[in-house]
Amino acid sequence: MKRISIVFGTRPEAIKMAPVIQQLRKVEEFEVSVCFTGQHKEMVLPLIDFFDLKIDSMLDVMQPNQSLATLTSTLVRELDSYVASFKPDIVLVQGDTTTAFCAALVSFYRKIKVGHIEAGLRTHTIDSPFPEEFNRQVIGKVTAFHFVPTNVAKRNLLDEGVPSESIYLTGNTVIDALQFAVKKIDTNSDSYKVEFDWLKADTKMVLITGHRRENFGVGFENICKAISTLAQNNPDCLFVYPVHLNPNVQEPVNRILNGLQNIKLIPPADYISFTQLMEKSFFILTDSGGVQEEAPSLNKPILVMRESTERMEVVDAGAAVLVGTDPVRIVNYAQKLINDDKFYKSMANVANPYGNGKAAEEIASILLKNL
Ligand code: UD1
Ligand code: UDP
Image (cartoon, rainbow, N blue to C red; front, side, top):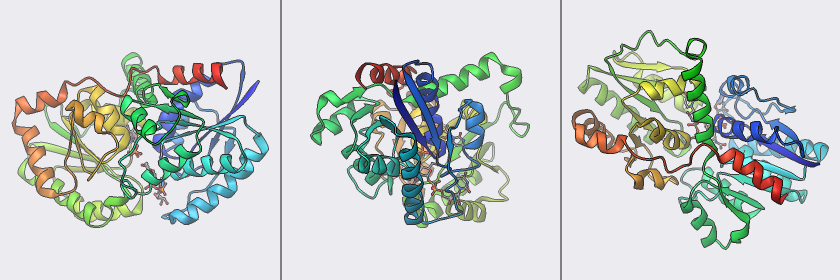
């Protein structure tokens, strides 16, 4: 019996780990322990219910607006105790958060194998995204099983000298999660269908998310100015923004955008609601990693409000434009999507480069054969 520990702490990790947890729990040869660090609270608890994730170890590390150093030191201490008591053969981490970084670090210190899901993403600019690029590079150094979403990610690791036999091309588990949610919506429409009574069927709705640390300050001021300009120039469109709970996001967004007639600021949406908002949207303005991966599956164009992205596959495929945080560029591209039908259609009908929804199954079978 192999002992597998799965650690997650934030919203995207919960969504992307959920299919992996579901698959690994089906394998009799595995004893699975799931540790939720509590790096996020309100934004993750509904996901634990929705995906029916049974948590074996619940840590409680979130403090309002805490520094990265405080978060890191608390996580290292708490995760070390968790790993010491479960004694896993492998610790699985996802992506590039502080939770993932700390879980990989304590596993390395204790000479426990690490499996990295969504491995190999790179901008090659150490502070963009911040601190995620650093986190994922360091995780890569101590990983035994690199589960990469695409060939681009595989190439990145090979270029860093990672042995090819430790790299497994699986696709991204976010597609598995999205398909799970879409199926729930389609097959249980009464229980899962959310009524957005403020959204008229014929209104063009632009969905917005934004939370990246490297955009805090001037970047966010610019993003909000662009949204405000777009709302004033397009009174027949509705701009819907589920606002991330980070106080550095809440402050500028509420100060600049609250009260404008066709802008709707709402709390972070649970996954089933957010999936329906994506489905109902005309296009999406975002700096989110996960949303860049999901949107092509729903045929939604994306404008990426970041200076660089580690998800160039979606840009190269033609479903996303990297618009950065310059308000003129954001407004111009958004206006083009609103006015130019041909441009819109060229971005809306693109095959998703991030997988086919079988990534978690693949990860489970690789671990069964190789652990
Ligand atoms: C974190 C990740 C980022 C990921 C993002 C997903 C790090 C360093 N950053 O950023 O990679 O893209 O999550 O959303 O790991 N808060 C709440 N309730 C919540 C969640 C957050 O109140 O449920 C507030 C707290 O004040 C918290 C702050 O947001 O201190 C920041 O949370 P933190 O996890 O440190 O960073 P994020 O910006 O959420
Ligand atoms: N998401 C959600 N509710 C929201 C906004 C996003 O459920 O209000 C989902 C989204 O579908 C995606 C994930 O959260 O799967 C992305 O998380 P986030 O943008 O916080 O982090 P990132 O992917 O940038 O690390």
